Image (cartoon, rainbow, N blue to C red):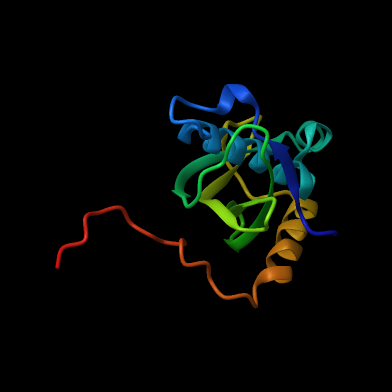
Length: 155
């Protein structure tokens, strides 16, 4: 498997009254990239139909690090931080044209049997792709945004 990448440009309707990409649009971009990642691991339209299987998002945490403006290109990388039979702990980074990380999202995804509408183990072929994605980055240091909580720090 080649490494995952998702590329996009900030459209004008993603820009808010502050002149930069709106927070909801970062999440839209991450959602589109997550869908592309799900396709990448073998659950594209054909895979979903073949396996009668899909993936739901259970939880997300987004960090906004730098502004993006209309027309700016970006690319996203994805990293499987952990997985089990039914779940994928996924981390995506959005990079600007200079290669700087401008936003991140941490997600927990759950595999769903479409016939039963319930959580179910990943199909073998998909699980193997998830493991390969995990193995390709498992030796890297954990990103500092992983596992963060929201709160006001008190001195």
